[in-house]
Amino acid sequence: HYRKCYEAGKSVLQKKPPITPTHQHNLTKQTGILIAGSAGQKIKSSATTFAEGGIFAGLQATQKDDYPITVQTGHSVAEIILSPDPIEYTGIEEPDYIVLVSEDGLKRIRDKISLAPDSCTIVADEALDVPFTRATVVKLPFAQIGKQVSKASVATGAIGALLERSGMFPWDAMSQAILNFQKPKIADLNTRALALGAKLARAED
Image (cartoon, rainbow, N blue to C red; front, side, top):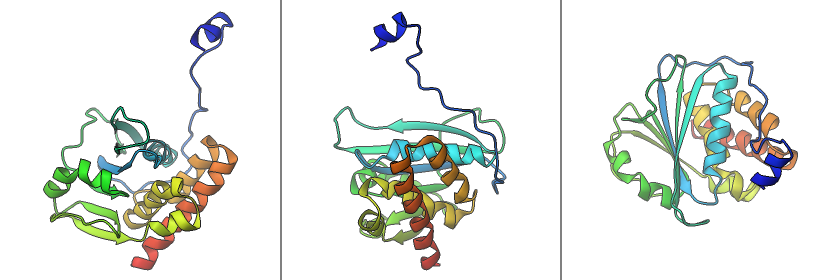
């Protein structure tokens, strides 16, 4: 594939159109978010769309992924940093928010959950047994997203719940990223999942 592209003078990279901010954010400092789930749950792509949504809201964003070499098994964790200012260090010492959508993700970041400060908020699937932590834990029925929309959209729905709870930027900004960068059928599912996740968070309040 690379050789054919090279010989044809084509780029092997998929270029995305530039993002022009169209929304407002509410962040005043650099904010770290961990999104933890299982391989096959579209954790990486959902996290990327989340970061793109942050950029649509005028934020700087970085993403680091953690997953094993196995295919469709094991954990998948994404670390997202959003900031109103340039990001000079991409590590997350203490997360501000954690999204948990599966047991695999919980096992992978269990230590970080236990050490999370009381300023951290964890948004977790209601079926997960979250270990003792000083962080605020909010449990929501993410299984409803899988049943009503798609299992592949659960992570997107969970992020919708996070945005509704945190108010860091409007989930409409992430919806715009979904519509701009995803194929129509997938975008339709993820847009519905995003709205449902936000609705679950509002119902919890």
